[in-house]
Image (cartoon, rainbow, N blue to C red; front, side):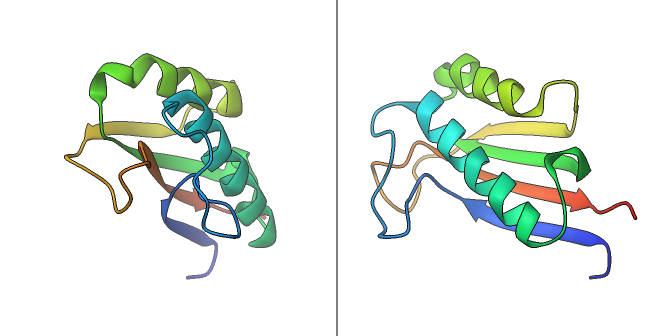
Length: 106
């Protein structure tokens, strides 16, 4: 897709499929965004190239913890962001899933 990077739903699972940050949406969000940064780099992009994030949470009352972790990763970068509560994710231990859109600037 040229200079566009679309990252599908990313969760707090490690290479072995183990969920990280069980019962902790803040830690799950940090883990996910660490993965996002790594995958963006593999695609030739950085967090600064992110223009949109879509955050799915199983408990919207945890929005502040999720938002805090998101803000720590993005800092002054202000991608368009939406956070939506969903009934559940594919694994009951998963509390957060994030999709990312980025445009690589040459």
